[in-house]
Length: 272
Length: 285
Image 1 (spheres, chains in turn brown, purple):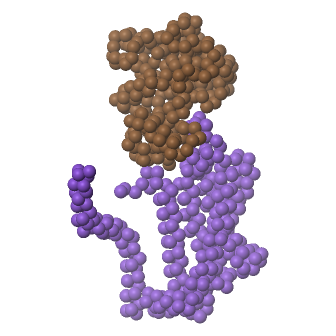
Image 2 (spheres, each protein chain N blue to C red):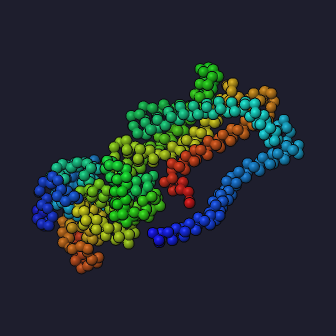
Image 3 (tube, each protein chain N blue to C red):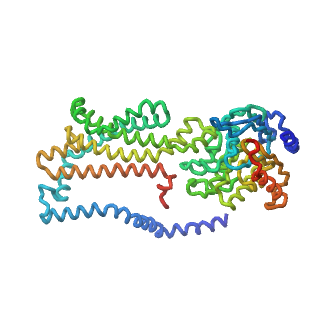
């Protein structure tokens, strides 16, 4: 299954190619997970994941709560260390600082104004004025340039998440991990945010890994969806649909059906 | 150019009709007034009742002199320079004690909040010392320092240390782990993590400690000065008692009340400045 997935990505760069200097200014990294596993005490959460993600791919990871999908994401960004196996980012062992992550909570500093919160994402070199201008530009990108002087407390949930997105994009990450970042938003704001994310990803082509329990969201955004069950990859599905995607189209519905069948299948837990 | 020249007088017109401009600010002051006035209504009323009671002879002068008599005593003390000198020495004692005790409490709170080792090493000891009423040490302190400045400063420092320590410690310890994690992901150095994430998060708690400490600072100073001193407001009161100058005693008490209020107002102002981000402190403008 893994081998077939590998060959499907003809459009993007080959994953095996050692990336030294990215050709494009913002180019994604490749991810290579080799028998990656994580246990908490005697309790294995991930049981050996083999996965190759080509550079610039938008990967969605879906699964029931507790299936280990968030743990996988934490391993990818270096928040946790794997118990077994290894993770190669662009062919090299993972180092901290490559990835940015967006959480379900915006995690803004309440005591810093919106602009200063975005500046947190910038590398602390460069003049103050330059950083300010850069942060303002990022805010404009998420449509919040006019809220630069506000405290995060006065923003709505969706606006806060957009500030968090601007902050995550500040360092032009080559890997953006998204841990259900839209989970706490209302349905309409979610759709707006999905469109924004899709547009920014198309522009910058970083490698994106989105963890979600919302299959429709995964399909709206991702090139490829994997389903994790019992700490293993249970389904690996390409989403070969053009963008912008038509919400509620027949192709999306068919794919959604397949994924939901897998998630809700009575044979779930074969591995045990 | 012509357009600009034409536009200019138009721009001038609003400021030309300036008489309207000061009005809003006067209105703004007037709008602020009721709140401030309301806060002082009760003290003012108390003074009026007190004055009336004294003037009508309901309150004997040797029990509680009239406000006018207290004011006269205040005026005399001010003219003789006695009040100013005593006020100065009391203020310096309070400040010195507060700086030493508050500084120590703050540093210990930071250290124990950030380092498990430091906490293990010192927290138990501090908790034991904290539970001794520091005023109970007065006899010992007099034996150690006599009635010199060190005695008063030592007592104030000791009293102020614990509220600052406990609240700083608590503030640092309850730093939001999600924000700390965020800071780590964004590659903040330990120092930046401390100054940008941990310390600002601890500030509301530290301010609670500060206000508590200010109260304890005056309390301790009053007691210390009345028991063992040769100068200061507390000494002035005790000295006046020996000469049955009730008006001066009352004056000293009122000065303590005002100083306490002043310190608290300063702390509040500082709080409002530093915690602008906090929804509870956001002033509606």
